[in-house]
Image 1 (spheres, rainbow, N blue to C red):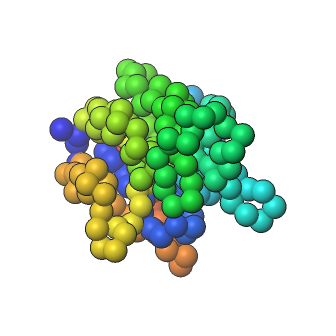
Image 2 (cartoon, rainbow, N blue to C red):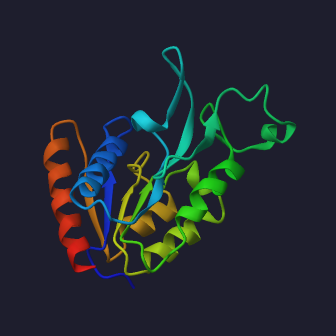
Image 3 (cartoon, rainbow, N blue to C red):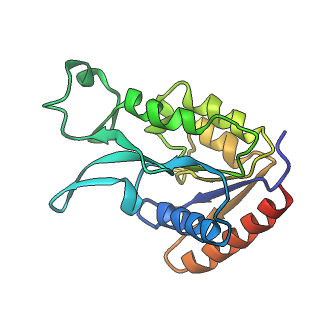
Length: 199
């Protein structure tokens, strides 16, 4: 099992800034330690993950930490391949599982020289991939620190996989809101700095 405190989870309502917080913590850690080996990706929300047409959000992208991108979900599938009509839906979005897996799964391979994993996020769209959560659990059971985001429970109920993460003995949970974002970011940066020095 992971050592308690090795998994830092950020949760909060959509649009509160979970992805932005994670990105800023990552940038701060890289600035103070340029040789830091970090694996992972961003997906929903934040300034990196949204695809817009004018003021309307039409989809989400997967963005790896080394800058590769691909579609995660879209409202515009008319020009996409015929199989896209069978993609699972989340609200008005169709989820491109193959694209997500091609980018995210290689980023979740546990390697000896990895210092930190970033997983943004473990949510409904990502969990349509049957390979994704087993890969997350494999990372969780390694000794490598993790910074991840999870959605807040909808109607008071968690997705079962999210509940497993939230209740994991190695997880520390931070709930983000508009008024505590700066304080939480500094707490997480400090906590991760300590973990990385010990890792």
